[in-house]
Length: 299
View: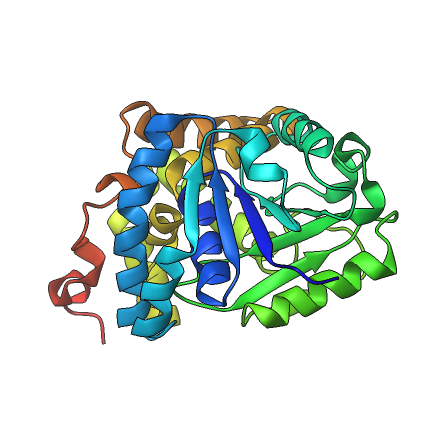
């Protein structure tokens, strides 16, 4: 299959990162979001993202400039889907929403279009039938493109080998390194570990065991990382972290999960969503944890 046109569903943080990675690799990219206001903000953020990726040497300056010319933003589902060869979805972490979006695009897209989801914690079999093309559907999950080119490929039992081959080749074509799962797993490989990590940090904060900065200092000082769990959550986007936390709080129905969800909901309700809004657990663009004095006294 010759992929030329890529459509990204969702103009949030990950949707933009995925879109520019594809565009920088030579593909024509449509970013779809039903909200015009989200698209207007995304177009501005995309230019900044291109510059940041180039400065970080994730892509070249030439790729960054060319990528911006290959991208378009649309709130028209028909326009976004009618010529799509490959779709990746980054809408809110709710299986009902994802199923509804895929069902709509199944009616619009050509028969050959491959559908993939960037879900963080769900598994593809939860929405496979709703896509209308379960054999041409799998999870294709990206991490922060500023940090890594590792991606996850997770089929469900009905994903065809042909579809997996297309996703593998596309993965390499956009300069990503695949971690291919042999069976479905909520959270893939890294996110399975990350979810437990974030949950532990939220539990410590929500119970009042320690303050957010000190929880991050504990992790950063011992593991020698550039950020702690709360800095990482800010980069993911607190609305995403909340949706995941709240989803599992409903499933598990235990005090710890509900307390964690309530703790992070307070930030979301104030519009403090992390890096994308300039404030989350920290203030941006120069968060406290990046300053030398943050770790004063820790050797």
